Image (cartoon, rainbow, N blue to C red; front, side, top):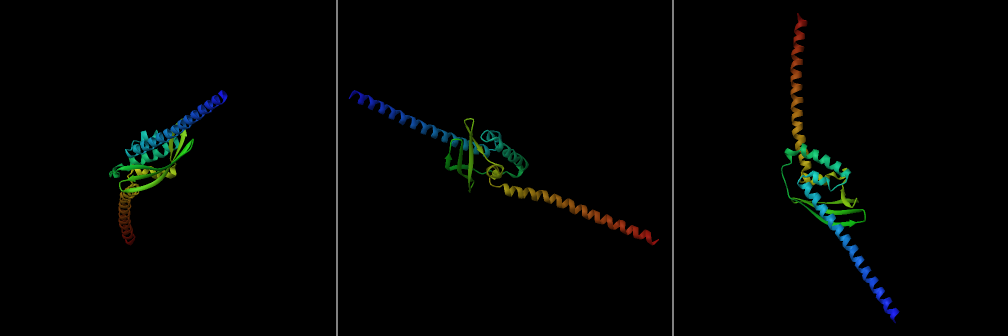
Length: 191
């Protein structure tokens, strides 16, 4: 009977330890998701504020290169990117594995809404967003407040007007000078 009691105590102790370890694992997993949620929010907040140095701390080195392209865009089109809108990111769904995660998010820019999936990688005990060049529109959507296409059109119109004026003026001047020199040569040949 004493052996049975000792065996029961041992089994009960093992069950209690297993229960605590399972709860502990789940808590670590939940803590990891919370940390990733925080990093996601911080990354998009930095983009909204155009704080690219901070944003770079949340992404892979490859994505930092994509951010460099967006930085150049914001500098180039700065005078046209004046209409600021409220940006909000809502996490819809997440799939978190040991070394990677996919976050389905909704990005609200003013009244406009866009759904995207952001991929994360776990490197050196830290989660980093991995946004390839093909998804650069996600970053532009936020930094240009959903007006990147309109800004490009305005920029190109502004640039094309100058090109058209220069070509038109050049052709007109060239034709006049060509006609005058042609009349002069005819007069010379008559004498």
